[in-house]
Image (cartoon, rainbow, N blue to C red):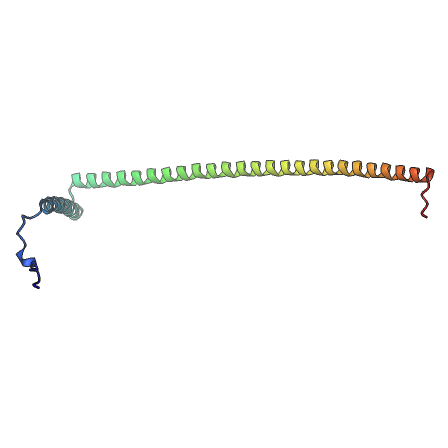
Length: 152
């Protein structure tokens, strides 16, 4: 019996390359070019700032001081906004704590009132049982006093 011919991986037909890779290459190339352009712009900006700080002119000094002033004002406004938000949050927390305390006191007082009512109810029931047993016992004594029970 002869074995069937085993196909070799080398004998496979050649396929055209995938288009997905070409699209990915294009996107990667564009992203890399964009990243390099941003990096180049940032380096040029830093270089210009260094030149202005080393060899300033009257106009660049004014621009630099204006930028610094704007940056400081922006940071100050951000700090004040953060403080304002923090105060608002503290007020909200204080209100929540006050509401929680009020609710806790209300629940505790209602529990105490319910406990007192239940104790009052038990006391009344005990009085009824005590009075009824006393009446029953009195009746029992009265009946046996009228009709004495003699054991033979």
